[in-house]
Length: 596
Image 1 (cartoon, helix red, strand yellow):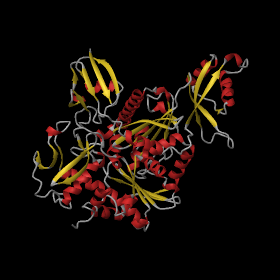
Image 2: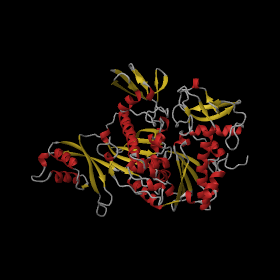
Image 3: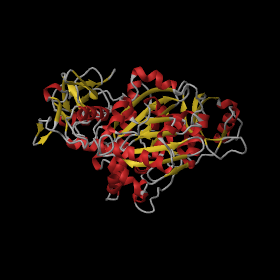
């Protein structure tokens, strides 16, 4: 047996493995999370780790001796310096968690003779102000029975069931009963993105944000966008495969967060998940065929509350809540975004753009909301680019030009590992300004380097990178970015024309998504990602889908608002809009016409 010392940030874990065990499999077996969207096929090259200060792929490494392995730090969804600011978003929210916790002091000697165990238990909770519904869960009834015959303090987790009370009287379902006191009431919020999944762990008693994790969606290997995944889901066992691999990653990531923070997974009693309509259908195992085929219908828009364990195995007893969607291509992630930015409360007209694989756009105010979705592709999130990575340590986040030289800003104090979507945007802007590319994104004669047989602009030689690979972009990369920005721009433009709005009438343009971590507004406006709006009106809101899920966890008032917003939002299907393709084609240039 060999000793494997795994280091993830400030957390260290030692395990024993058999000689010649695959390192990726060993890390996954340890309960720690590692990004490996290709499933260990050595295709995505995302599972890089450091051994003896040298980078290597975990999927291609085998344990031949005792090893110390440094895992990449993925908990960068909320950086430490931004953590306080992130928590402040929720400071004024009255904490009213979706799952409530109460401690009961049970003394069997005080109970009435011949009273059933469940009735005795109900009476104890009634004294605490909770009216309880009868449960059909036999295992839970057994736990209650055992508890009522033992003198001790028990922690009870309760879910307030909507529309079960009479008048203002609430009725509660028992979620779990655990012997002991001072137990936590933990909640998990999830943004289930097409390309990137983000999760956050919270203490619901206090509303305190504990930690987060962000990683590539492993379903990518079966299709970069939702259309290809829907097609794959129609194949034999395709839907089961897509559901299983994403659930496995969630099990790993949730367990990893609890390990790093010394919490028990058994204290997680609520999970809220937000995502586009297709991602939610695939996650729940619902048929997705008619999302892309006539009559273009989701199975359901407002999803029922279910037992978390029926989907996410690691959650032994808890409830799973799904943010409702609007239409086939307008999902709960945008509903969460509206709530996060409070567009539904404002007098002024605002725009929200969630920049991801599926670019989603909302225009509106407190009186009306209209939205659309456009297929931007995964380029902004680092996928679909030869050397693309998510915004993380080692990512080239921005490019500048000084003294006739390109200068690269790298996230974190480390060697570069690739270029993020925002890095590519700033690079394209400079390449156009300095005449390395034309307004169609094609290289001029100033670019002389080659990778293989094709022209490429090389940022770093492989000797300078953490993974010993060149970092470069080619015309295919540039084309992918221009197509992505054209989809976003034309979606905004078309909605504004339908509403007869001028950009001067827009109060704020909210930008959501991981790209907001480092996007330079000047660069974005230069390449034509957004309409020409004053920079002061552009506000980055980060992962608004995740923020909306967190708000759902901690506030009943916001839970009501979420369902109201999903019902009042009008959906515009761009595929039925004849002018959309004209808008899109015109936006494929820099900035958005074929005129220099």
